[in-house]
Image 1 (cartoon, helix red, strand yellow):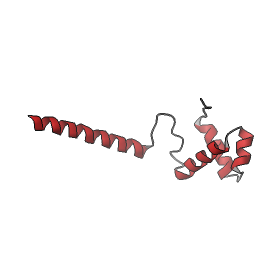
Image 2: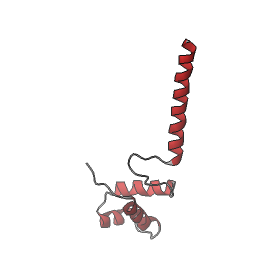
Image 3: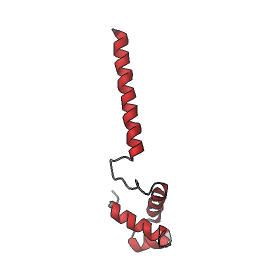
Image 4: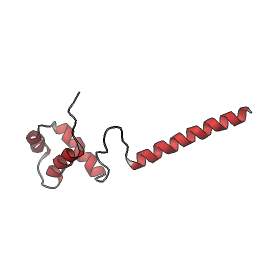
Length: 86
């Protein structure tokens, strides 16, 4: 199992690359990270700085809304099928 890093550490690493202009390879080496991991963190951060690194098991707000809508549709389809049998 790989290492787990908290949101603050990830943000610190990403800001070294994004704001201070350090290279991914250099920053990864300094922080003892895989460059591939740091590259993914930087990509996630650039995609959505506010909701990046939501944590294990948590979803971004738009993903949570989609999941809830899909559940509501399944529930209504199930209810509809039951009512059709009556």
